[in-house]
Image (cartoon, rainbow, N blue to C red; front, side, top):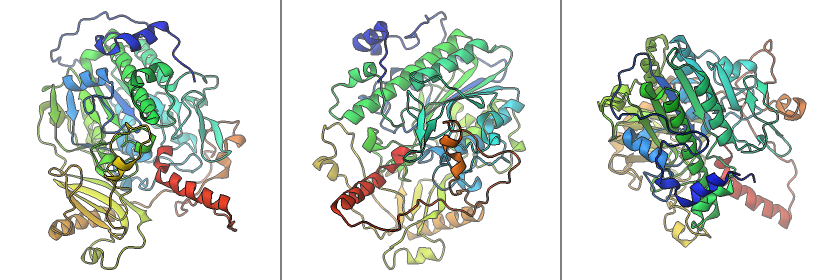
Length: 572
């Protein structure tokens, strides 16, 4: 483990990190400006800084949970607008695809799972992305961090999808120090890229620090007075593996649960990164005409240290714990600051909102599912969004339904299909929404234990329809499906309507040519530009052994395989 070597850093973390002024840097710079807390009218389109974290739960930020130390994020959010009715997707690729395209998954073909490293799949090439629209509006566009939107051919890379520069990892999960990424036993490769080439020789530097340094370098070399800038910082943190430098773990030494302790340390590193980025915005002249957006990509995985408490469910599920996102907007350009917004917002809304802020023409992009919500965020107006299609996944069907389960609903919608929709106050789920436990914070050394069992979901396995009034019951404890069949029928009809607009699922089988051993030891594009597009009728399936061994060791392996299935979402 590579620890922070600076004695001043250790001293800072040990003797007063939280008491220091949030705009004072903690590395090499000093505060040089005195920013007045007033609203400034932009002379040109604003600089846009979008910071996306990975797997940060609803309960994993200081203003929701004082056990987590995030003084920078807390102050930025308090001085801006907290988004407390904001939704993302339950896993990585879907959230990123909807941010970049402004479209629901059913309209991009990415409605099933994630894009695996060996799949010949990526964000549809015929769709104009958010950074492409911003480039058309005159922006310099830069991306630093995790991509996870496919890379099987060069046309899929960030530099071909609207970013002038890119520095980061293409797959879904990498080692924070070595940048190794695996897609199964023996299928590992190096994954750190500079533009369209492999960035060899960077191992040993912690990714969050490395990415922050790159952002600050871009900010220092760009002239903010001549051209607006769009910076997309897509942090790997706080995704597994839980690799935190010891200096950041020390303040959480009182936490009994080791995974929770390391996870909290990763959140503190994110806070430090945002602190350094916001300081650079001030130092280099961006801040007064800037909009900073902070968002998570999905809910946390409780079994690897995260927490969505008191929300139900976790990453990979359509319960609130999987899709209710942590988010806020901080900007001197906000008309009404220091407030909490309960307006219904979704990650697809950033596309038209940011294009509108940039002075671009949103009408040039047809088929958007997002809305321009800047008046809602800045002025407190009502949200134009009345509903959210969380997803329809036709490849995920629930088998073994009890007889009579949702018989009336079957005439409107096949309730074995995994789907979820929010309309006004109401939320409907069908099929298999994912594990629906309420998981308290893992503060006990031997968690889970008897306390956790008190919050287990005890509903029968044959159930296929759930209905909740999310406004009155945000924790999804009172299923109203039986009491309100009229609402169930209306929301099922909405699902049927959306399903008529869906495109075929893009989820091809693995391509053996993607193996890093065939590509110099790194994850890189492997399909040439002259090759035909793969056919999308193939569905990914894991190989199965033809012969099953009957032995005690096999039974033990089977047990751990089932256990791993429960926590598989921490891989993605």
